[in-house]
Length: 286
Image 1 (cartoon, rainbow, N blue to C red):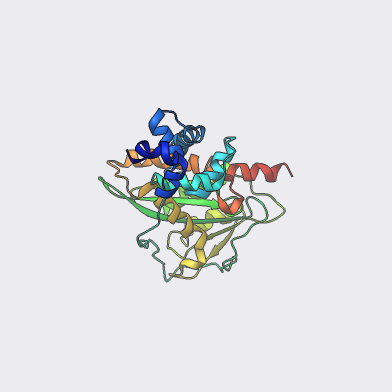
Image 2: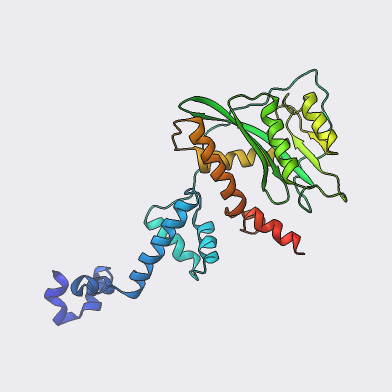
C-alpha cells in the first residue's frame, strides 16, 4: 500500500491529506481498531432502522430525529440525516392519483358549509371531519371510512366494509359518538363532502339525534374537505402503498394496528411532533 511504503519518509497524516483520504480510516484498517464515533454510528444506525420499521417506514430524517429524542437519545439532527442518507433510509414518498368515491345525490338536502376551509379547532370534539376511501386486496376492492377530530387529528371512529353504502359511514359515525363525549359549551360540527352517504336521511337523522351540526362542502372540490383528503394521502402512503394484502381480514387487522399507531405513537408535525392522544392529554391538564 502506498501509505505503508512512504509513511516513514512523509508521515501518515500528510500522505492521507494529499490523497484526500481519512487518516483515522487508515489506522482502523491497519490495526483493526474502530473509533468511538464509528461504534456509536453503528449503534445509532441499528436504532434508526428499528424505529423506521416500527413506524411503518414513514419517517424522514426530521421526524426520526424527533423520535430518537423521545427515546432519550441526545443526537444532532445532521448526524441522523447523514446516517439515513448514507444507508438509503428514507421516509414514505407520496405518489399516484386519488380515486374519487364521492357520488352526490342531486335530490338530497345538503346542509350549508359551516367550516369554509377553516379546519382549526380550539378543543377536542368541536369539529370532526369524515370521509372514506377504497383499498385493494386479492379478494377485491374494499372501503375504509373514518371520522377524525380536527383538534388533535385523532381517529375517533372508523369502519371497514366491502361496500360503500350508507352503513359504511354510519357505523364509523356511531363509533365516534359512542367513544367521545362532545362538550356542551361549543356545539360539535361534523364536516364531510357531498357524497350521497353523508346526505342520506339515516345519516342526517343520527347527527340530529345527537345534537351534532352537519356541514357539507361543495361537490367535487377536495379543498372543502382538505383535512380528510390529507389523512387519506398519509394513510395510503404509510400503510397501503408497496404492500400486498391477500385477504380482507388481513387488511382489516392491519388497519386496526395502524389506527392504534396513528392515534398513540405517530408524530404529527402540526401538533408539535407528538401523537394525537398525547396532544389531547395535554389539553385535559390545562
